[in-house]
Length: 93
Image 1 (tube, helix red, strand yellow):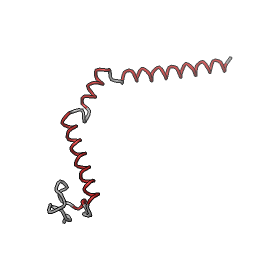
Image 2 (image 1 turned 180 degrees about the vertical axis):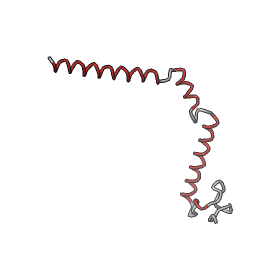
Image 3 (image 1 turned 120 degrees about the horizontal axis):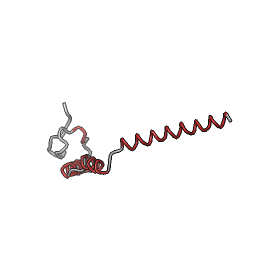
Image 4 (image 1 turned 135 degrees about the vertical axis):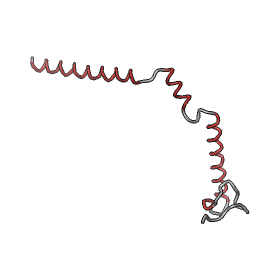
């Protein structure tokens, strides 16, 4: 009888803990409207940010392609936007 009582108390305590946890989760979780607002505020949702990221990606790929086709160490350039031939290449001081 005593073990049955302990088991019922344990089950009740676990159930109460789970109930409190679920209630806190429901309270803290944002609603659907707030979720949509948060998604709009995220980076790269703005067209300007997306264009800037795409341009950066293009520059990176162009630099990698040029580095693959030349013997020059492109990491030593002062200005990476300028080509290696007659540009601002060379070591930084």
